[in-house]
Image (cartoon, rainbow, N blue to C red):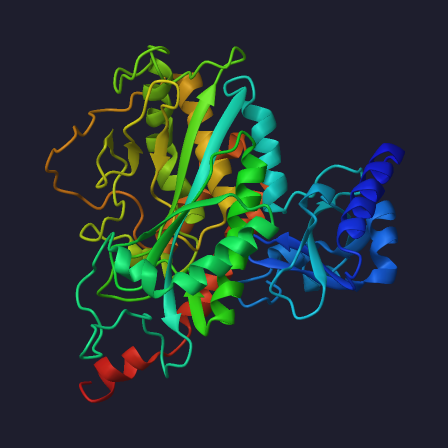
Length: 463
């Protein structure tokens, strides 16, 4: 750590403690390949040394499987002694934890390799590397993340939505009731505390809507011109939603498809790109509210996103449950198509003025890692613009379309596509790609070795 960075980190800590002098514990956190935050707690007597001198933790922390176990044969796992790696805090991410019982704080951190560079396996570092590779094509990137989730009854015997009740009869409200304000009033206390917690942690949470299923909601984050920060916001928003839900006796669920008969939950990425003169490279006319026409840059971006979609599906849909969401009848993407103001496409061009013209990438599930999702999108964007990829036919606003399953709809197929990728390899480091594929293949095998109740329901009596 440089002397300048030591001074900066110490200054940030000193300022924070002056405002929050009773802080006695701090959580030091990093997002692993699943987007799960892992780390450790330190006491107040360790704050200064951690911020000034850094610390060490096993680098394999970011390569664990979804159950938090080491994956065999992967470097930096238990097989090679689970070695420690240098780490340093991201000082500007230091915030209080308002839901903690005792005065506590949290801060994100970065791993570093032996040469002082960013660690190959940390998703935040993967995105940082991709940003460096695309900066000529995309000098300024403005983006935001939308997250869908369910609120579940925390006292139920099995997971079920925390549905609103019909006044007078006490039965659950039937139907999706999308955009119904009463559903928000029913959880007003939860939402009030959620936004207070977000404000305390500098998370720019905005619009909340009732989504297309009972007890399903969406929260939008505000656009920022720093993709790393936007993804920090996304992983921390998940944490805040889960913590606030626990305070109110709920369980917040970010599984991609928790209920067979209801809509899945997505992670939608909104992104626009500006040149060095701060002009939107997607819009032909900077002065009028025109949508379309589009520039070739937007068309080529979409062409690249379509071309890279199959090999990126494992990042957009990383888990077994992810593929239960990818059905053509549930507002989920199943083929690489695009269109204006149309929610049955994978890449949507929302209604917008020329200055803010953007695309919405709708493929990822709420269970995906936002750093890796954003990195994959930027790889497709850069490849498309550099190679002038043809986006194909645009789905027009209001057009009725018949969807066909064209992106991988099985976990093992997505793993195969990722391992054979031709575009991502130019942006993601080889060691990460190898480790990520091995991690996902190991977990796929372990998952399919499980004997579920469905096995007995279908086969015990019949065969």
